[in-house]
Length: 229
Image (cartoon, rainbow, N blue to C red; front, top):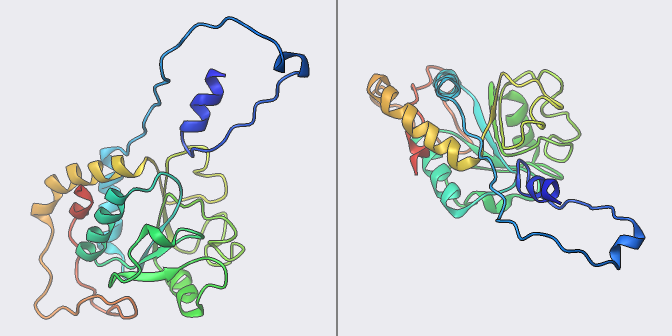
């Protein structure tokens, strides 16, 4: 029973099936009262956040894919701010349309069933895919055609709270085992040491829109400080 409660609330939270003998179901037993189980929370390392900042700064065609369990209004607001600050288009995984404001200038669309062909091309042509919480299953990847396993054409950063999910299908360039709030805290700590070294955007740099990104001479991106909320 203890293992069942821990597994239901850890990593990728979800229901746990308990198989019990029939004669046990109608029996009575004296059991001690135990406290609520404490769940270990995973967090990214400083090296992970430094590497993520470098990949974002170098990318010309990045794309964020949101999904997975445990999303919150706080995480939604933080990532919307990050998308604006870091010039990142954001798509949402299958059945995760409410994870990101669909009216936000950085919103790229729903990457699920019958994905828009233009958005599908964006995923395929991206040089950096940052999957946060999403498993990147067959629905989100259009039967694994948008992000091809085991080693994708795109540089893949895969952030997921369950370490068993990382590496199960894809060999990410940067796998990060973390929950969303710890990812944002790690980004804030990294940004404090890196933001002073971030180069300024050149004068007259074109602003990002969901459908247009400069194809040449991309403006340098600041460190991921907008994940600090």
